[in-house]
Image (cartoon, rainbow, N blue to C red; front, side, top):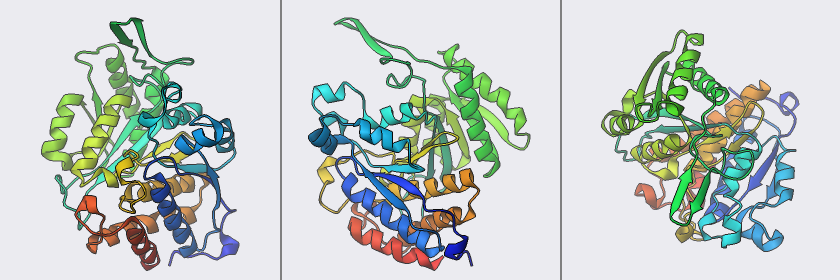
Length: 366
């Protein structure tokens, strides 16, 4: 039985908790509840939660969507859960400073974005056999808010011309390749490098070639490469063929949304943003403002993201108790879905709070 006494448990974690916009104030507490329940189930010390603000509430209180107080506090905690932001609805002066999530990723150099996609029993999926992970380089590429030391990589020399700079560096390619190959070594031992070197031979060619150069350090892992358009088509046709895909920022963002939908719904699309020392749980989906305040949002993505966060902390701190807690959450979510309990986006009738209650109950059944 994977329960330990409190005397054996590690020190209490300090985790940032950021509701964000839209459905954030509903799904972030839902994630907190299952984390607390899972830690209790394995006898771990309870989390010290540190509430922080971004988005509309931060604008109302501090005049900015990402206050300095939030960034300073994030530097002091073990890790954090970030709710979605609705920066498209911010006033122009607040949109100009960049989306809060992107700024946080850049500030803390969260260079790896790990995005799993798998089918669950009880959930209709367009690709029933899907069980893959997209490892997305998160610090450069074609994302204009993350590829310059100052300013952004988009500019307009005239009102009628817009330009964008894509950045690919050997160092960033090497570290994301190591993330992908190390992950694949724990799974089905196959990495697909996704690129577009046929039309971007310098940038995407560098990405592809550096990934291949890292591959010999993982002799048990098979490696192939595909153009991004072919990979998208292949995902639709035979998603079960993939294990781990490694790719640059923009391609990874697009392909992971596709993979999430193929698995049943973006409402289940979890992700972890991390470096070697810091991590942030953040669902792939957005703020869904039309659902806000209605107790109808699907909390699965952020609950599974929180499980990933516990597993990451377990690896960083060599703490098996946290890994067990993460496993409890994953099991409980899967068991709840398999029981036919689901939110409306999955064809069910459960509310956010009802679904979360069911997950919390099943955390103890592992």
